[in-house]
Image 1 (cartoon, rainbow, N blue to C red):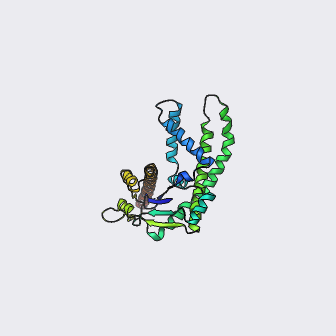
Image 2 (tube, rainbow, N blue to C red):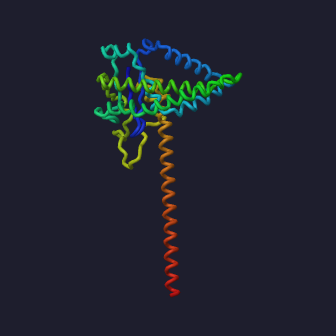
Image 3 (cartoon, one colour):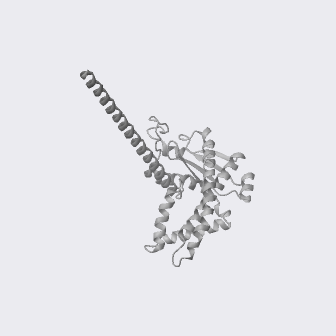
Length: 282
């Protein structure tokens, strides 16, 4: 298995796991169920009209808003007994691939540890709320000819949070047992280098994008991972959207401060004028 660290901005990194022998492990009931749902979803995407097409359109919009950090943890397989034995014995190597120009080698493990742990409490909380909501939405299935979309969405989100939790636990276990083999990639470096250097610094103190949508195909070809395209597209879209929102909020705050300063200045001028008028009267 390979774990890829792909910096999206100067402060955010995409984690993606590529399982080299996934077929040898994905035999659990949950994995088979997820594979069946994925095949059914792909069939619905090919439909030109009907309620299935509408479900897919709305569903894809909802999926795009799921944090890319969650998708990254979901790509890491749960730590089964068989996988634990193979990784401990060395039969299955786990490499941590990253661009050393953007991520110094001594920081790589710290970054992957942060990605594995920082959202664990959030996923547990959201998983609990999904379990609370499922019994509430289950009776909607009694309505004829209408699929119980709220219930199935909560089921999917519960599974998604469960996978993210277990993906994070797997990474923590790898770190504790020192089973991650650092693998700096010079090929990835070439995708980040601009004008002879990687723009990882923030001269203005603001978060900066490191990759763009136009580079997604280059990443896919360099890594020989077509599946990483959708992950990068989603991550870049979310980070650009978040940065745009932050910039808009900062502008609104600056405008509000300028407005308050202007009002204060006007009040000061009025007070000064009144004082001058009183002096003239006296």
